Image (cartoon, rainbow, N blue to C red; front, side):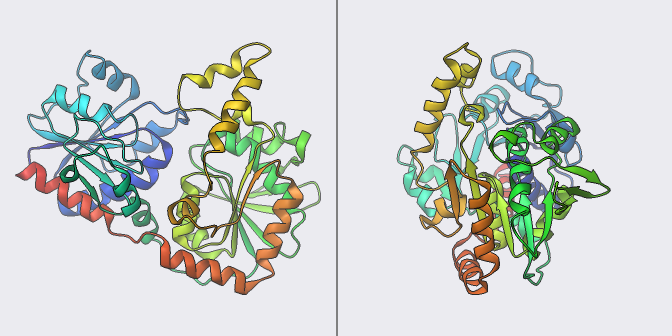
Length: 392
């Protein structure tokens, strides 16, 4: 196959849960396909995206600067050197795939959890029927529901029996989440007796950020506790031990543990698909530190009034959402417990304790998740359509 496949991705979540399963299927169906991964700007980028991308089965990689220059009319990245191909946007600005595609002379597709349309696109793929119905400005013939790529990421992990007392802590893959939630969740763990704790550390979190999280310097004023390291454990002041696990172990832990404590984000969908009852926490004591995905994110740097203004904007933005957990959003049901606002350590501990002490409640949540969460298969569908298009 001579055609070039360009996968554009902007964020850590998409890189792990959309790109990886799609690449796996493309390589299975067309091992010799030329695949280029292009990185796009993301306010949640950590700087580790390139290193992770280089471990994936791609032929070449373009960085954010190269792609932005090309989008703006500048030089073409050296990696884009095919005579025919297809651009597939997996996150990022809705206009970017079409812009890069038009400059290369390739058609452009997009996969998204939001039904944003741009006339430069040839096709838009979405993840469920609700989103399909929301795609009001999209020509019906050009939008299609193919399912959720995240489900394919979980599908490779073998099923396991649930334990009765193991708790998984998933503080997130973004620096501000980990530095504000790891020590907070650890403080809650001290109030949860007879439980075994595991922490899934994202590979996108660098050592400096991890040390800040362990020090609790961001959370001591509202309940976080300082942690000390001892081999693979983070230990609280009262001796509660949190076993630290690598990124590669987290899906197995999701299928094994009884309950999870987590932050809002793609991880809530992963946990939902894995069927684990999860307490989704959004402490908003420091709302001004939550990133905003537009130029307003610089408000916090305005002297005196900046942080106050940003707090009000974040509060107004979050008030638009009935739920913060993706499983709850997708089903419009309060399946996973959520804690939002001035969330205390004791509230988190009480909610987890309630779940641990009630097997019927946990099973009821698991049954709902198994019935309502997306199933694997989207990656094979999308890969097949991509290859059919470039061979047409």
